[in-house]
Length: 353
Image (cartoon, rainbow, N blue to C red; front, side, top):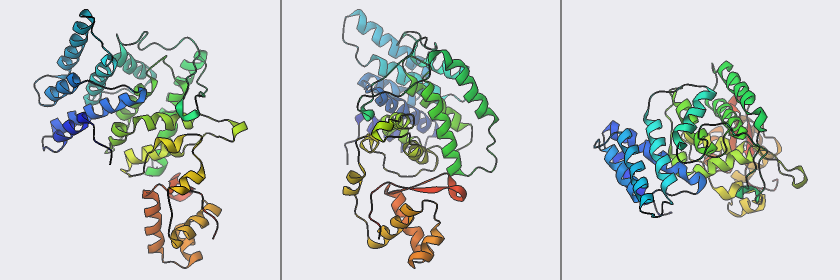
């Protein structure tokens, strides 16, 4: 098991307490700090002390933000290193936003979030970019996603938000909800409306949006797997036909399944890398005879039902359900697009039996 970060261990102590106010604020700080991994940033001991004072009610969020700003202003006046400045300032601001009950669903709100998070930290906070960008991505061997042309940003954002406002969520099961919300998230991220800070801004916006649905959100993926979140969005918006690489929604739907359903799907960044082969996946897993038989049927017919599997290989439906649940928990199988119209994804290479 990896060693738990010091900040995570410290904040987890508040989660164990029964005070709802402290738990809510501790969760907000955990998400805020965890999201800094998106850009490889680390927070300081000073931020952790400030977070503790805020959680314990010694200072409010405005005072916490003022304290952090003052701390770095004094360091700069003394010509001291301030390499943790961005992570600390943005973390405090994210925690404040996540603890606020206010939210407006609009492109303007997305801009306001970006402005609030990065004002004084990066140039043109809250401003739509006025030039085209590329970004080298580790998961793509330093290739880039094709982001929206800067001239199309505002009309495309307006279109996506209008489509989302008009979408009918009635009678949508949770699997279909996961697919839809991950589509919307991926779309606004691919637009990349700002020069920097797009992934953290998108994450904060989506967390606040999800709360409007009354869903009991599991924030652990944003705390522990924020870099996976970004890489999943990268893979959902990248194709290279010459290399046989295509856009895939698999990874972002796994991420949102852990958030919305509380699933325990393993989220490993190496699985998203374009060089991660099916044979490498197979090397990590070896199933029983019955498990291989189930996977073989699903591989040949991704839309097959559990009842059809039961009838074909003469296993009880209860056994097939147990096997499918186990394989999903181990990230060997993934179910997408819901129960009624969905299908299976096989995440390992298995010979037909």
